Image 1: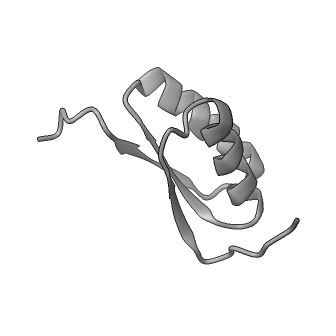
Image 2: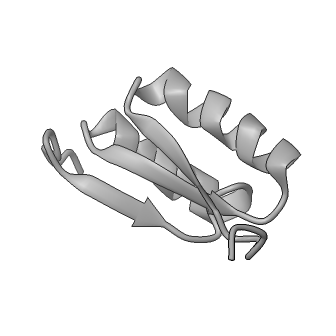
Length: 68
């Protein structure tokens, strides 16, 4: 199934590994801008690189609560 998501923003929780990462990559390949959410900076960085291979439209969100 191919869908067009250009111009759309998608927040994918649990997106640093496994199914969440696969979903984020698939949505990025469909043109969406993806926000990766995670608690481990190393995993976030790896996920950003993986999703960026599908599309250049990816950003990260800090879910550690350290910004409070």
